[in-house]
Length: 492
Ligand code: NDP
Ligand code: BG6
Image 1 (cartoon, rainbow, N blue to C red):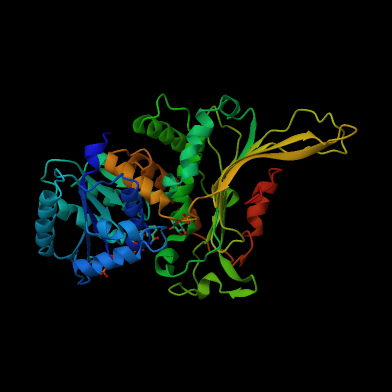
Image 2: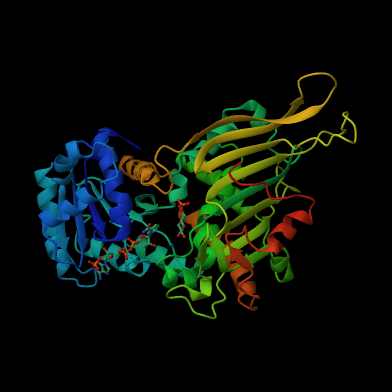
């Protein structure tokens, strides 16, 4: 990893007219420009089939900054670095013009041949674009060549392997940056600090002191306009294979010997390898799926999933998953990691709750049940940690009461902001792949998920089985209650 010089780069965004580019990438690049992380030696090419002029493109880029405070001052200077090239990725000839423009901008901005390619397009194009980038000579320059690719990375292990093989024909593994935007979130990156910079936490971080760990990624929104993609994906592939297993691996991994990309990855891979693989009826016992039906939130009637646009009216796709994961190694044997995620739930929240074991004996009498000690890591909408403890109620006698020690603030820019993308793009420009998914992690995750999907595919569930605006199907509550636990409430 090097810095300064490496932030000179030509950034080519395939899918430059799309939603992701507009909502996340341009605002993120602007933040980097405003902070000085991108100097004057950079250029961005937006490409897509639409016939846009540079001026029209720059206006679109400026419009994408409208929610950023004081953006007017720098918007013209920033957008002057943007160029548009109409280009159909399936047409070999149109790569010639793109290549010519790339070489010109390289010289104009003194970019030293550094090139970052961002594939913000439908995944079926990824392999083709990567091979054209290679065959048409885009990477025949001095300087670095890096490829950022969006999710989903395949649909199962086989398709992920095929995609990976096609990318690897043009790029080495260390040049491929697979985005998992959760890894760019502030509090996900904070997990390592909370664990490894606090002896009182890390010394309790094992099966002697922890009862269970709960990871919740709940969403209020339904599938919105992504019915077509989602109906073939479902929550297992959309959220568990990537975001949730990444979070679990960060929570479960052993302390790395150094905080380098390779050492952290090594430990995450070992954690993923320790995940217990379920077979046959174990899948039904430990993985619960759900699909939202109609409901009412804030007086508004909401459609069921099967009534959403571009969704099969008999769809058996899950919009909710809850599961009990077990990690079979010395540190975690016996500690369930409960996970849950779903659309159209009661709250938008991402949180991790670490439940510590109770004291061996309650000295305060049967009539006073002690609250559990729980460390909550709030990822969003709030960021921070809360430690739930018991103290003495002020006054006469030994009456206990629960208190919360809080270090929580609302996230600076609200949810689902370009923030995570900003960090990740800068990491990529600097050559730091720590918060990107390595192929070893992706392939292990798919291997695990494929086993679950294979069993689910053999049966149909009684969907819909939860109301929009609830916290998912009853079976998800039963999953934790049968072990004597309860889901820790979100946003508390
Ligand atoms: P959009 O459908 O909004 O954008 C797709 C882009 O691809 C458009 O710019 C389109 O422009 C271009 N395109 C389509 N076909 C061609 C072609 N043959 N040649 C050249 N360009 C083409 O998709 P999103 O921006 O929403 O998503 C892009 C990727 O990012 C997907 O992989 C998605 O899963 C992922 N993603 C998106 C998120 C989001 O918030 N939007 C969040 C997380 C991941 P034109 O029609 O002009 O050619
Ligand atoms: C994406 C999923 O990866 O993450 C979406 O494809 C989901 O379905 C989104 O809505 C949630 O991200 P965030 O940052 O809003 O929690």
